[in-house]
Image 1 (tube, protein in one colour):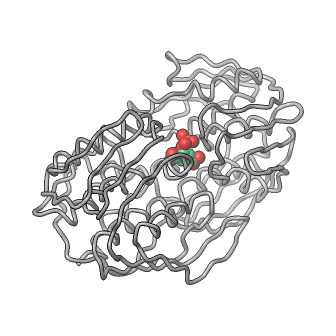
Image 2 (cartoon, protein in one colour):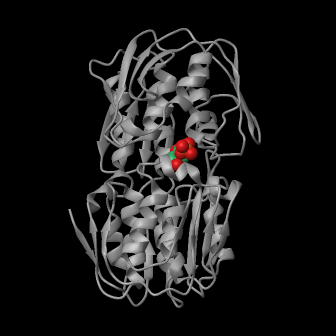
Length: 424
Ligand code: S3P
């Protein structure tokens, strides 16, 4: 599907997104492992989270869904052998996190994914799971994964990459393992798994980068409202950054500090960010946010900030040419192993719009004060690339066409309707 995006004059109005993808994955998985029926309002509408729910259903959980209200009746920890391969679709989170669960079961299973997911690195989870005693066959470190369920033993593991998916995989395997499992992270990553485990009655100890749990814990169903997806809201913050005088209001959005670095960075670059209300639910912060455009400055994103902003970097890169100082992104080589090579995709699309940009192995350098023109944008079947450049196109001269724009359904199926509502 091709979608045409016209240049805009301003961005104003309110934005509401379905539940956060990262939180929904974890709630869906843990609800499938828990005893009783969990009820979720505002569950993620993403195709990725639908993959997680389908995998849990394939292993015996009962999933009922009416829009974004989802009921999951759990298995009480007694998963059934799936009759078919577990199809993770485009979702790295499903394959990596659930891989930890299925590795500890008494049955064998196969995990498959689409073409993009089948190219993504899985050794980062195969390695720790093997240290715990799992037996996993892969296609040269990639899916399909054949997982021979085994009795696992707790380990202490220091992942070589900063990855919440790897941390979560090891912790979820640890739930079923003998003894204690500890993950020591190189850089603190999103902590939704720790918070969700506690929400479902699990006991997890964490002191910043060091997280431990004991095996054999029982989980209990919960009732929860899933906070709106902050990574989806980022596209609207970037649209706001494009126009001084822009103003958006976002209600019910996730404000977890391990995710909200994007708000600090946007604020430091000139976007006015105000919190109108903040509440807590199961350890997750949720609130109302108001953002207004000023003069977008740009700057440098590097180190731990790059890791914390990994999903938001394409959107920020896509608007960087319009900034005053330009943008340098360093220490973000992980972008190359996401749904597509996001460094190369950003560079190609920026150049298609007439921008000057330097590609680096771990990032890019984008000078500021540039004028871009509308262009044919390739999504590379990557949701975040499609949405990032739909935003960039708002400030370009002339229309743009986003090719394979249907990719947005992977995280935010309502994206183009939501954008149309706020664009003037
Ligand atoms: C996610 C972790 C990140 C992120 C992904 C979602 C999660 O991946 O890019 O979109 O929900 O844990 P990595 O763990 O590979 O950094």
